[in-house]
Image 1 (cartoon, rainbow, N blue to C red):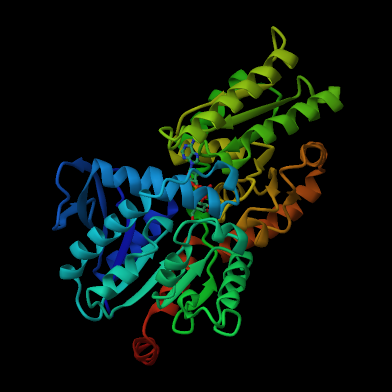
Image 2 (cartoon, rainbow, N blue to C red):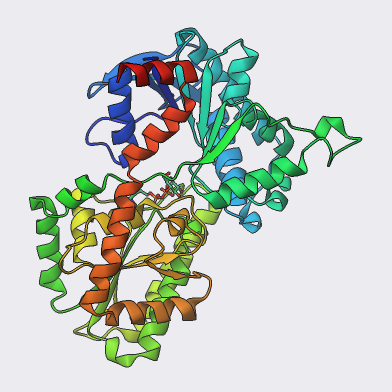
Length: 463
Ligand code: ADQ
């Protein structure tokens, strides 16, 4: 079997893997004798030209260092102040500084130059996410002929939003140089196809410079998932049970509404707390019997728009506390830090409602993890944004428009009042979907499509 090389902005670190992605790809890499390539996390004066190999808990990792100025332009600049907001349809939050594109391109070139000498001709390369859109182009410009796949973890934008991104045509041409482009959801594939159709030679006749030829690149939806069995197990582990006891002690007889997210404007956090405020205001009988817990560790906090989201969330949490708290009852806990997965699994299991209401999201793994952690005999209810990729998979969740806080408040009421029988029936369907779309199935199906057809054929004959 050919080797697999995984490339992402950062390589996984030491210690227990933080996410299902690292665990799943770690397993696949072990089977295929490949390595993981990416930035080391170190900022240096002169960019490194050669990668350093390191064994990190049995995983072979090749890393390069970046200069502070390249990294700033590439990461906080072009990737997270232009691509992230535009792909999430938040053009109002994009900041465009023309020179960032040079840094973005320079880092992708640096990745390509350091990776090329490490490649064997039949290696398969799997590139992850919007930081590295130009990588296949850069590798091909240096002569690489390997099969290269790209996976976009975030939503694909509408054609209009794409046009607002500087150098969008070059970026789309870069995408067309992958053999396979994977997206989270059908909605993303449709948006991509719409753009590709716009670009077809017939629609841009007279302007050949603008045409991007997508005919050699395949595109498809490969929805990512969690490891549901691992979460189900973790949710009854001693660490999870300890967390459950800690919370039950301070919140006796309270039905818990739980949100877990990176503190990011795409996650709809202020709107979510506002919906909870409406629930308490409309239905006084919920006061004293429910409690909302929002866990949101800071993220990308050097970027102004993230600080503003954090301030907005502080303000609305303060308002809800001031409005509804009493000396012996608090409506809300807001925790601004990360927790280990077993503790999170415990909280998911304890919650009566998982409130997952991003304004737009590639997939949303919290929804998967919440479902997998439930007690089958007394499961909680998932309230899910229609604008998360997960909504295409979990249609037995209560689906809401997160911009409509009245609708979300009503969904909260419905979830809190939902009879056990209905909760079980919905959960069983959700859990079946979480299994069907596990992270293992995701990586296998993507790699199966990326693997050259002659290799696929010979492995099928061997089996
Ligand atoms: P994210 O935007 O980070 O991922 P998400 O899919 O929800 O969003 O993944 C978050 C991960 O971080 C989950 O595994 C969750 O458990 C963990 N996490 C969140 N809050 C935490 C906390 N307080 N403590 C510890 N862990 C926490 C991007 C895209 C998504 C896409 C994923 C994977 O934006 O749409 O689903 O990649 O492709």
